[in-house]
Amino acid sequence: MLSTVGSLAAIAQTQYFFYVQLSNKHNNPYSLTQPEQYLSQRAIDRRNAYGLECDSTDLPVNPGYISEISSKGVKVHNRSKWLNGITIRMADTSVVSQIRSLPFVKWVKYSGQMNSTALTAPRKAKFGSETYNYGTSATQINQLNGSTLHNAGYTGKGIHIAVLDAGFNNVNVNPGFDSLRIQGRLLGTKDFAEPNSNIYSLDSHGANVLSIMTGNLAGQYLGSAPHASYWLLRTEYAPSEYLMELDFWVSAIEFADSAGVDMVNSSLGYTTFDDASMNFTYADMNGKTARASIAAAMAAQKGIVVCNSAGNDGNKAWKYIGSPADAEGIFTIGSNMSTGAASYFTSFGPSSDGRTKPEISGMGTSTAIISTSGVTSTGNGTSYSSPLVCGMLACLLQYTKEKNPAMSLNAFRQVVIENSNLYNAPTTQLGYGITNFQQAMSTVTSFTQTKDSRTNIAVKYIPEHKLIRLNFSGEMYKNTISVSDISGRNILGIVTESSVCEIPVQNFRTGVYIIHIQNPHEQYNEKLLIQL
Image (cartoon, rainbow, N blue to C red; front, side):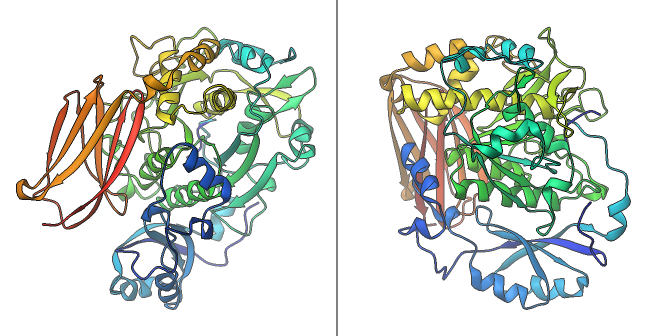
């Protein structure tokens, strides 16, 4: 679902979508020793910069499995290497039973449909070293104290951002994007919902979102990251709402990772669907249930700064954040007014497992944008607060890479949170509040590597006691610990401030597990083979 308040390729007959969960990646022709086979050099460099290693989730889905499933007469629409699954589509669902019986298929689940009659259906309401002349965008930039970064020369240059959205109407001709096109900062486009469509002739939502980050009309408007570079990725199928759109989203963020982006902005969220049996509950908003939420958290673990709008359900029966806003390790962005008060529509946190959501906020009421006709306008929604903040984070990331390149991504995230106006008293709609990016610049500069690597972490599997023991030395912080299996499925999560933590594993299955540890100043991953 789009998150603002306020012609597709025809399909000859109804197409039914199913998600296929594969059981393994056995006999995969790709190798962890040759990541250049499936990752760009920029993606490899980003992992190296943060001290992250490639693991089995980076390996593509086994092409032999895809070939065998395709031979049943279905089309592979999307694939997810992180979750080791594919989305297939077909007109005749009778073949699903054959696919379920394949030895490498774990389970298959219906996830939605598209048909030609949807093309005329009404669209659903949308959630939505020099001194710069911001024009109509001045209020929203200045509220974040963002001009300090811009005036110091940090405007997002060299930062690659993927925008996941519903369509980018007229971006190829809109004068507000002349600079983006002329300067070669439009890196490319890709449609994960309808691969043969023209995203420049579709929904205007993504174009409005993009304008908030990189729009430029001399003397009239300037975006929050005017010199960043952008991938435009379509994942939303606006005429209907089904689970399959989360699979489109997963494929897009995996593509963004492989392309080597530094950041992702997603002004999308999912809670309820046209088929009510697919609906999420608030209990599902724990960051570990919805596939898009799991993928968003994995992107953060792979060194990507992910921003997602909180949603516009604050004044509705369902008032909470949706997926993937509930993901761990990302920035979920709420909406505030020019006064700093919460917008009436911005969705509530926390996540159902008690984490502060949203993390931070930006101006989403009467946000200045550039319309698809190339003139300045305004709109409402967390769809607009998210790209505003994302753009400023891109400028801060550019600054951080220059001034403190050893800083971990988790430390970067904590710097942003600590320099937000509600840090000591977060609320359920604005989280830690409005970030002061001038103060964040100062914190980045003074942040020392000693602070960032304050501890030694030892992880050990003790088979005779059927437990994992974690030892922390040095200054103690609150550590968030999660354990996932090799497919990325979360097994458990705990929080501890103790120097020793023991995790019983008697109910685990034999296999490889990933231990992920986060605290305000670092993140740590380790793989363990558990044999029971």
